[in-house]
Image 1 (cartoon, protein in one colour):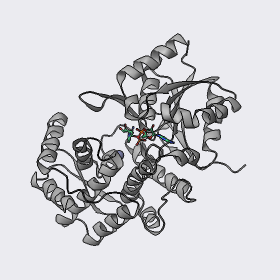
Image 2: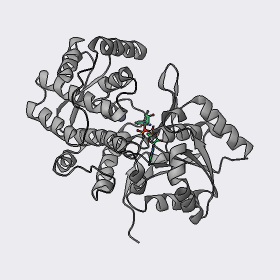
Image 3: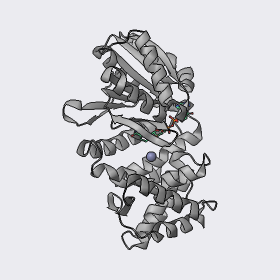
Image 4: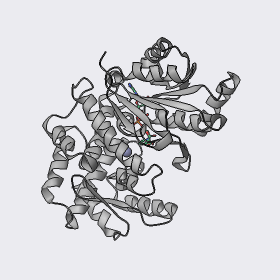
Length: 359
Ligand SMILES: NC(=O)c1ccc[n+]([C@@H]2O[C@H](COP(=O)([O-])OP(=O)(O)OC[C@H]3O[C@@H](n4cnc5c(N)ncnc54)[C@H](O)[C@@H]3O)[C@@H](O)[C@H]2O)c1
Ligand SMILES: [Zn+2]
């Protein structure tokens, strides 16, 4: 058997490996089996139907007793009431400190299950089996867990690193194509902020379907970018902010679009705006904006949205600013691999970028 490629997340005593590629499910299950006799699989309902059995089989083959608990599909998993329900089920079932939680699903499921693992019995071990491209390259890496409140997304959460993460390409075959493309936005982001060679490889031959032979290597390189940033700044006091490239406006667009754009799609628009703002300020060469737009278009992501409402977006940015008690941080860029954070941009700067996106 060839070993499954791994990327190490270096965090002292909390270090762990992200296993990537064919065999990642079996290898992660083996680590669960080595760590504990009992595994509670907290799975996105849709994913449980598609991959629950394979996950359970792998855990049982590794010698662990595995029981499946379902979470509502997608973002609805991230309600405190869901975490309460699951924790009560675990309590009734006699699940203990030495047992483990295995999260199976997209970023919503890994966020919710990771949060449950962080708070149940003041924290038990957890493993992640991310099943969307976005979760494999981003959400399941780095130990941020959270649930939502009606007042906003991710308002209740905690840092709780998993013991291992398994990114198996087999999961991605059932992913709706639009979700795969949305994940590619975070791939482009990772390449832009930390891997210029990956960016060029994506321009040559982007992995547009789950069976693309380069996909595991693409995921590995994205995880490596995130690993480096997270290892340098586990709790987001500085360098980790660069991961928000494209996200300041992206979040505003996502919220204002009310479901019209997926997160990754809104981030694609946000990245175009961030590079455009950087070009306007003389930070970045204009041809790089053309390259970004061409790549996003090639992978089927939006680079323009004539329906954006500048007034609503400005109000949204102001609201976020108030809530965070400071000026919003804008991730600008001087080119591939160079992200700088600007805090005191004139209010008109993002507006000009929004006008650009509306063209
Ligand atoms: N913790 C972090 O650092 C971090 C980072 C980025 C995003 N996030 C969070 O991640 C969430 C978004 O994650 P996401 O984009 O993976 O979305 P998601 O988890 O909501 O999943 C998207 C949809 O795909 C379905 N699905 C998942 N895997 C599937 C598969 N293999 N086959 C078929 N269908 C499948 C789900 O049921 C859901 O309907 C957000 O809540 C966001 O806040 C967290
Ligand atoms: Zn994102």
